Structures are given as structure tokens and as C-alpha cells.
Image (cartoon, rainbow, N blue to C red; front, side, top):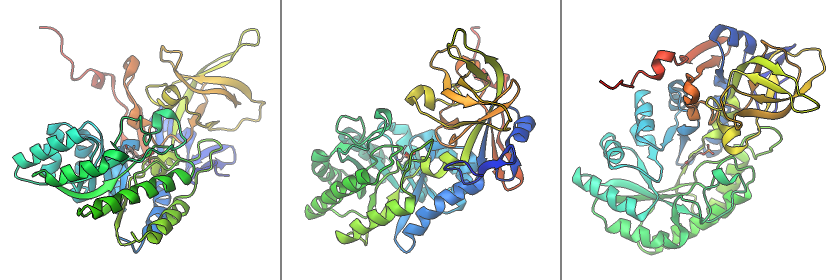
Length: 424
Ligand SMILES: *Cc1c(COP(=O)(O)O)cnc(C)c1O
């Protein structure tokens, strides 16, 4: 029986399995907290994107901030993906797995000159530029290196992605992108600057989007701009519609990628833009439901006088920030089903913050020493982990059938302060 949204995570008998391996055994073998990813789930999540775009000029750029483990990047590079990066650090990571720089788009609203220069030197495919000021600096940097930077302007279509305010990015008052009204003037400026070559247009309206309508609204506005920009004599080679497709955490029902794409492609064709190269930047939807976070139950604290009961586990907000940061609800299950009545717990970590919780009011039949699994933890889990409370970051394992690959070692205590210095 597979868990909702998780094609390769489910119970065999009483034991939770990731592909063919038992979660509890993985926890015993590698320790906890432990991120476990299913390789096949990632490939299965990618397949409908690739299928829907087959026969068209396109590039799928995995938005690697969702999960930037080298083995995950390697998997997507080998599957033919490009990458959407947002920092110089991410650039070095994808280069380290041998990814083709010409398949990298560089997003982000605060690129430094150093990051720009490095990306120009390796020859990234495109800079997604987010402000007029950035455009001027990029031109200067490129000109100084005797190059022309390929640019796309990230336009802000001012549509409501109907998602959490912290992950909505396409509204007028978000910090992202160039306002729709300013786009044409900014393209004109880009065309004048000596260090730039205009190649495309992009948008990214938010994350964990579970409806098709916001995408269609954004598409219409972007195509309006494409037409206006080309009427002004500029050429755009590609249209990049960003990422943001949601996943099922508990009861969300996002469209399947191929259903979303079929509707977008139909509109693109109907408006006569079918010849254009299309880029997408999916992140969460490729990796979110491929991962679980395993954690040991350290202590059970029964509620006093009908108050809350706590299930204290060894994973915390530093390992998985989404609940603390976005009040995100993620599924939590026992890795061994017990034939006992469940009790309702707040599942909390050891960090000294009341915001350090992984789940609230969860019915669980668990005992001290059991291992729980936080579901849908493949995206924005490990990539957002910190060392708060001087906690070493978790290990990561990639499961491929009946094989477990340790793809990141648990961070050691010595590693925590390796770069620090005492006063001499
Ligand atoms: C984060 C991000 C993405 C990926 O978003 P998901 O919701 O993970 O699909 C794509 N493009 C840009 C510019 C981003 O910042």
C-alpha cells in the first residue's frame, strides 16, 4: 500500500518501505535523523514533463534549490535536464557533477558581480534578470570580460498563485521580477546595453501551486508582453514559465504535470507561439514526494490535565524548516505499524524554540525508540537545513531498488566548527 502522492513509499505488512528497503532498517544502518530518497520516484516525477514536451524545442531546468545533493543533481543531469540556479554556490555544485553549462539558467534577484563573472566564464545559457539595476551591472561585468551576457527578464505578471504568502512570488508587491508595466521599457534598455544579448523572457509566480488557472493567467500576460516586445523590434528566442507546481503533502490535489502542460501548450499554440523554445524550472514537483525524513522517538511526554502530549524526536527545525517557517503540514507516520490505539501528539524536536515542531495534533501509535517518517521531505528539506543549536546536519541516502547509497555523510561535531578560529 503506497502512501498518497508517494509512488515508491508504502507499507509492506507492518513495515514502511522506500522502494525495496525497510525504513526502520535504513535508520538503524545509517542513524537518524536521516533523509531517504527514492531514485525511481524522481525519475517518475520527471517523465510526464518530458513526455508532454517531446517533439518541441524545450529545456527542463531542475530548480536545484529544492534539493541540491550532488547525487540528485547527477541523476537529473543524466536524465537530460538543465538546471535553474540561484547562487554561485549552486553553480559550483552543478559544475561538480559535470552538468553542461549551456543548460544552466541563473535566476535570483541579488546576483553579485563575482557570481556574474563566474557564470559568464563558464558560459551559462541565460541570466534571468530581476531589476533594471541588475541589468546595468551585468552589462558592465560582461563588457569588462569582452562578452555579451545572454539575458531574459523575469517579469512579474501580477497574478495570485493562491499559495502561502511566503512562497507567492508573482504579485505586484513581491520583491521578485520586473513589473509588467516596466517590462517593455526595460527590454528596450537591455537591447541598448553593450554587454547584453536579449534571448528570452521568464516568470515564476510562486511555489506549491495546486491550480492551473494562475499558470494560464500568467501565460496570457507573458505572451502579451512577448508580442509587444517583438512589435518593438526585439527578438525573443525562448519563453520560460518557471516552476512552482505543487505536490500532495496531505490532501492537496495539484494537477499532474502533463495535464498542466497540455493546457499551457494548447494556449501557446492557439496564440501562434508554438514555434518558440519553452523552458520550465520545476523544483519541488520533481523531488518532494521522493523523500522522507526518518527520526527516532526519543521521549513521549503525556499531557497533564488534558493538555498536549508531546512526541520528542531527534529531528528538529534545523533539519526540516518547513513547518516552523511556513506552518507547513507534512504527513508523519510510524515506520512500524503497531496494533495499538494511536494517541494524539505534537511531534517536536530538541531545539530550544517553541517554533520547533514537525507536526501538530498527530495520531500516532509509537513507543520510545520507534522511528517515524516525515513524508514529502524530498524538497526544501535538507537544502534548507542549518546548524542551529550546533546540530550537525543529517545524512542522506538514495535508494535504488534494493540498494542504498549514502550520498551525504552525517556532519560530524568537528565539522561544525572546522572553519572557526580562536583569538590568538
Ligand atoms: C524556487 C524557484 C523555482 C522552483 O520552484 P518550485 O516551487 O520548487 O517548483 C523555479 N524558478 C525560480 C526562479 C525559483 O526561485
